[in-house]
Amino acid sequence: MLVLAVLLCVLTACAERPKGDPFAIFSEDPTCEQVIAVNGEIPEASAFLTAEARVLATISGISVSYAAEIDQSALGEQTVRLVLTAADGRTREIAARASCIYDHTPPVLHGVTDRSALCGEGLVLRAGVSAEDNCYGACEITVDSSAVDTTREGVYPVVYTATDAVGNRAQKTVNVYIYSLAVTEDMLWEQVDALLLRLVTPGMTREQQCRSIYDCVQASMTYTADSDKSDWVRNAYTSLFVRGSGDCHSYFSAAKALLHRLGIPYREIQRQDGLTEDTHYFLMVNIAEDGERERWYYFDTTELRHDGYQHSGCLLTEAQILAYNAVRPHFYSYDHTGYPAVESRVITPTPELGITE
Image (cartoon, rainbow, N blue to C red; front, side):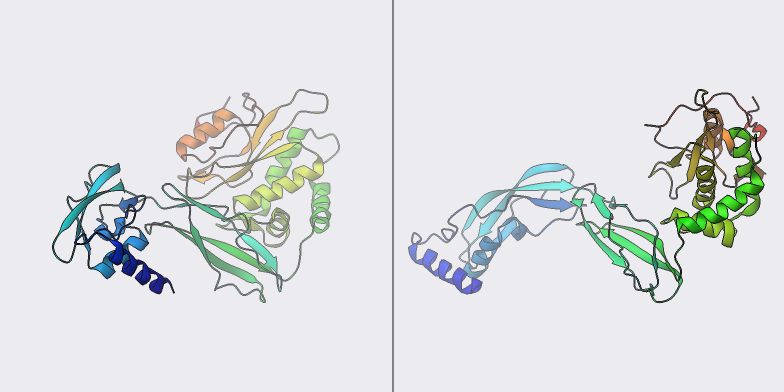
C-alpha cells in the first residue's frame, strides 16, 4: 500500500509539474534534519534525503551526489552541498546539514552485579541495570544467561553487553549463584551469638571488642577472589561458618554481622565506582563508649597484603588509608559525603606505611 501511494504521488506530481522541470516532484524540502558522520566515514549522499524523497528520486531516475565532500576535520555541525541530477543530465544544488563526530568510547554499564536465587525460583537479571553512552544517551543491553541452570545449585556466569549506535561495546561478566537452601538472619544470628560468647568478655571496651572481631575474622577466613555480593547475610554465614573463605565483601559481611550484634555503630563504605576495574568494601566504626564524643576509625578485616608485606586494617586513621592509597592507587578512595570525620590519633601503628604515631 505504501509503494502504491508513493507511485500515485509521483504520477500526480509528474502530471502537475511544470513541463520540463524534473525536480518539481519534491513538493517540499527533500532533506532530512541532520546526518551524523562518525569516525571519518562518509555517508552516502542519498542519506541526506528523507525516506519519501529517496523513493521519489529513485522512481524518477534522480541521483544524489556531493557537490563537495563533508569536511571530516571540522567536528560538529556543518552545511553540506548536494547535487540532484535528473535522468536527462540537468542538475540542481541543495543544502543539507551534517554533524561530524569521532566516537571510540564504549557505553558505561550501571547496576551490573552478582545475583542469587534458590533452585526453581525465577531469576531477575535486568532489574536496576542500565547503560549510558557519551554520545547517544541510553543504549541497548543484551543479557546472555545461557549458561545458567536454575534447577541445579552452582555458580554460573552471566554476560551483559551494551552497544551504542556506532558499534562501540561494553561488556561485563558477573556470577549468578543458585542455592538449594535459604540462609535466614535467624540462622546467622544464632551462629554469631555463639561465637561472640567466646570472643567478648564483660568489661571489654568497644576498641577491645573491635580488635577481638578483627582477630577472629582474620583467623577464621582465607582470601579468595570472589563471592556472592548480592546477599550479605548469606555471605557472612557461609564465609565465616561454612566455607571459611571469601573476598573483601565476605570479610566485610562477617565483620558487619559481629559489629551489629554487639551494637557497635558502624558505617558501610564501598570504593568509588570507575576508579579501578574492581571494587572494595570496608567499614568505619565508632569506638566511643556511651556518653563520650564519637571516635570514628576505619575498620577493614580483609587481608591487606601487597609487595611482600602485610599490615593491619584494624582501626586506621585517614592518614593511614591515604598512605595505603599511595601504595595501591585508589584502594580506599571513596566519596566522603555524608560520612563522619575520622580520628587523627594513631592507635594501630602501621610501620610498613611509615606511620607509627
